[in-house]
Length: 354
Image (tube, rainbow, N blue to C red; front, side, top):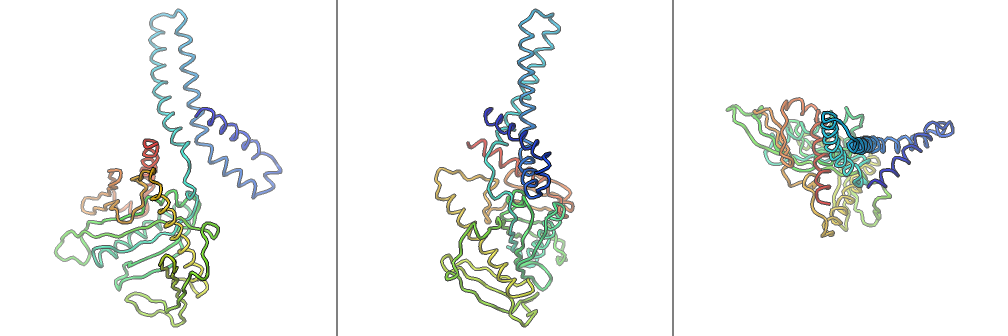
């Protein structure tokens, strides 16, 4: 491990020098590439420096203990060694996590799908709340939202919504949101004040490029239809909406929220590529009998991952058994603390299973 860390520090120092090179600065494309590589290494290099300082401190204290020292100074040295040893163990754990192979999809944008589950209209309204939560979070992160396909109820709830979250690193933060989200609250339509339980499902797919997965034109059946609005009403008469069926897998994708048939087709293909890539990766995981399922990052849409309890002002993630309060703040997009806890737990689980 130490050889690997020393190699990374050397690379980091080389990148630091290159970022001050006028020729590199003049080439913005190359400069941004080097700056990203430098940024990616900064955390692990800084932790490694702390680890090395702690290690050196222990060695120096032990050398001093070999000399004849007065009892009071000896007690101080032994206390310092114990403190540095504890710090060294903590830093070793951090380094093991930081050295884990990165998910190759982490830097990608994502396609998210939200669908109302059990609970009728209340489930659809909750699905709308979830979309707003993710949209506000994306805004805070500097990401862009592009709605690709939408189906609403007459009251404005979401039956199904497919949207792109466009931004570097979106998948690394949102990939743990896949699964069933359950809500417990008193619906606005409930006159008796009874608490209802309903749910919505969320799927998070890394955006797939054409180079990631090949789609043969002969494998596609493409239909056009009239876009629909709330209650199924036709909102235009140009038949610009697109439905694509991938014949070999039976995967069906529709897109109706773009302005033209051509744009809807491009967006539908974008979603199709991502679904096929996710299916391909899931099959590869299942085929690898030696790979253990990581509970935090499993991403199974049938798993109940989180409960939003409005009467108790509490959000609980069942995978890590942690709760947060101030539910309205969370529904307003302040989910960074939840995201961070899930990432930390997933990494710890990988280390434990290695």
